[in-house]
Length: 384
Image 1 (spheres, rainbow, N blue to C red):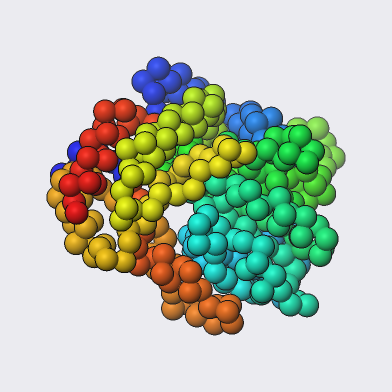
Image 2: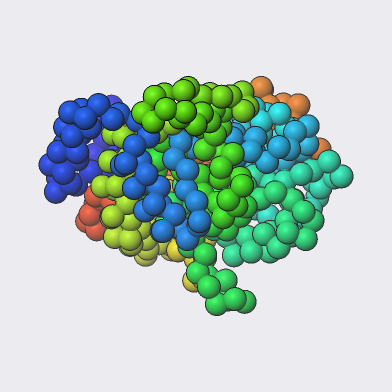
């Protein structure tokens, strides 16, 4: 099918390409292909941006979430996780030797709510995997953070959509960035995300002991032995069974080229979101996502909801026939996945069930022009 627009699209400016290729040639010439100086520089740039003491590059967000949980040493316990997320947010809990409790989300933000957490608490819940859906750190999140602190719950944030997202904590008059709002945060740099390294992820934390465990876990669980003779490799010792979750130097270079644009790209994504609001907010049969003054959202996707009088499938077919691609993220949701059936909360997920029948996303990427956004909105109007 020929689309006039993309649903999502990574942006690699022409002005960056010569620099990227130059660095790739250098990597090929030196043979230093993995976990070298460019990955280290990228880690430094990330931790400076988010404000953490440590940043650990990994091969994907999914494995980053897994080893973040493994590094805690917690096993056999329950972790509350929202249903409205990619399956990796649930699978990481299982792979870490723990038990997910898949719960419903807030009907406005599509993120975990404090109420949903409290309804699903039990003596064997050890933590929360909180997902900043569509790059939104909800205003309620600060209350969730305090609840976790008061109840000794490990707070892992899935920041896959939220690189560069911010929230203003008015009580302390401070700006907190995604990746620095929980005990550990994990970003995704998949091509559809805010910045990309093709594949890849980044773990951020202020806990030095945890960071050291994470560096070991990403490298087969090994630590290199001391050199008895200078320059002679004495191999490694395995401290914990693990696997290879390293990032390549090529990814590090791409990440360095991308991160320098983060402020302008988030600004542009917010401009596009504001244009969608301007052109669509008067439509009675369409509910737009929430907007908040004390947060900077990254708008990974622009997710809207049709009213129940409109057949979504017919509507989306018309939209696609007119050149506008769309998606139903994430459908089926985690509580609807057969493989996760035994992990569903006893309170079920009625909010998500209803939302999943009506939602869809509009194109969101930084190369969209104002005129193209207006055209997309006109097409949306014409489909009813």
